[in-house]
Image (cartoon, rainbow, N blue to C red; front, side):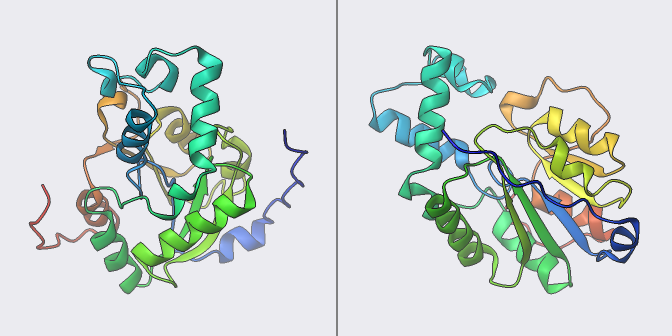
Length: 219
């Protein structure tokens, strides 16, 4: 459907060493944005109901009892829709991401969303609206479901934090010397690897800064 994306130049060692120490690498869906909530409402609106205990299933086709190709097709359709301009923040993300930004931290977003340019613009606008215009230093968009190994390899040895909800991507980050954290969801509770779980962005904030933030709206 799409042509081959141009190869991104690898970071030189000098560039890696000069990279902002206050840089956080983050996934988007299930980390910054509540993609799962919005997608479930959208699916119900299209007549697809989640199977019993479907929130414990990561695979969309199995979660909604659909053929594999149909599940992938629906995810792509959703990711390329105008809804991407209106997804809500995940849990306490808005408060703590802005707080980290106020402390001088910058974010690189790495998301396997879509190569559709218009959808990317909507996603970027929504993220800036929720988290601030100057919070994000870079947006890296991969195709729907695309592996992140190549992108993460460009940050090898930088020791940056890498926030994910998909354990396999967190493991890739560990392999490249990143400090991976896994946002807890029902569908990833089976994970028993080396990347620590975090329940929310309050825990991420405290892990990164080493300070407890007295904000008790979310648990």
